[in-house]
Length: 230
Image 1 (tube, rainbow, N blue to C red):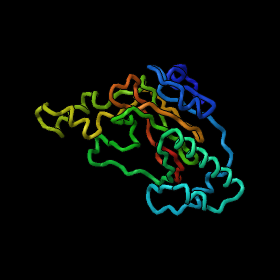
Image 2 (spheres, one colour):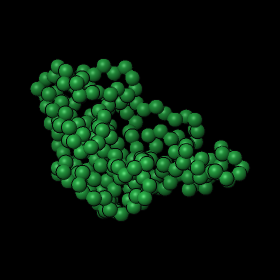
Image 3 (cartoon, one colour):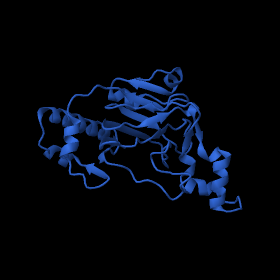
Image 4 (cartoon, rainbow, N blue to C red):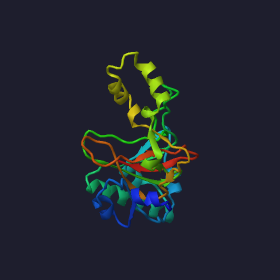
């Protein structure tokens, strides 16, 4: 799925859930994927959900109550098992049908929504888990191919105009508005698709972390997307 030699130094594939959660990150590796070929009709599950919002949460009870074909039931069992595995690990997985995410238009030259390449942040040590079962999958960007937007001089100058002419408190302003979490691909950078059906564990930014956080983005949806995330 991933060919480049650089990617092999940042991304690791595993074949089971235990290795997914127990394999340590390193200074090089900050994305670990349990690579799977799933069976079942996940599109059927999406079609049976009453989607009235841009993001609709599917709880376990609702999932169990769906009337499904044999292929749909195979997909449901996979979803229930993934939810159980992650919950037992201590995570809090959420299964969503996503039509689209809210767009950020407060600062048109610097959107901070999830369609922008970004890293996740937490006040405590933790990881991001995600899996796309149906619809467009997420992308990641190699850290070597990403540049933090706030370090780009012309962008930084525009942000200073938003803040004030005084540099005092500027760094706090960047953090409070999540500007520091966003990245821009370098010229000729190649985003890497996380694919369908694979559970990924991504390193995030938290205090005293020694691992570079994984740069990723949500796709622009063409159809509804069935996503598990925590």
